[in-house]
Image (cartoon, rainbow, N blue to C red):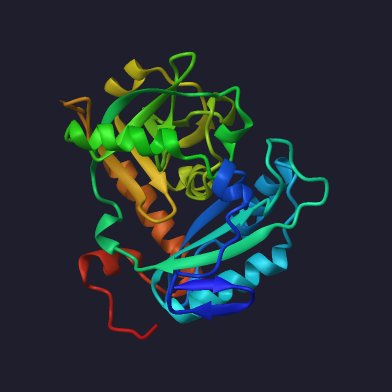
Length: 292
């Protein structure tokens, strides 16, 4: 399903200018969010991040256009995953951006797979390093080739996702998620300066830390900190909270904990407040029947 030029279409196929810088140079940004019962989850936060990331790259996009695209797709898809993409648009040959760019904005929707939510995952450390000196490391840009290659290598190693360290050897993130560690009463996640995206669910979990008796904070982490943690988990706008069970073939001492479960429950309540949908019940099949 595709939103383009104010219209929802049943296909993702549409005419496209092959000189678009998003296609040729990865010159653009995107954002992905969950839709439940026709209601986008944390829509305002996703929209603000997308518009802000575009602005950081010198690209102006209209937030009302983003809101309209998400609302139209959400109403059409019911339950699903929506992605909004914004490129700098077509331009002449060369690297330097055009003086007067004409941004391309479109959005797509795909089915939601509830089975991925809250599911434990196995990680394999990638040989590719996250470049924390690059502004792109803190934004969802279209240049995802490192993640594509790392994800393929992780799958070949029998893992579900790849763990990125940065150029200083500190823990950054995975190809698709932010990472958290529970250490005693502390809830730790790498700072943005370590090459980390400001994940929407990451922010929610930091704000909800107190509901699990934890103090949430940003702190640089080394790989050894993961092996000795009380629990390690990932956050993502579609998978929500994923306990980490194995890293590089070694099982963690606590692949899940009561506090991680408390955080997942608190996040689920936040989502229910905005959508009326019990995501835990959606995963387990115990949610009452409903219509989109």
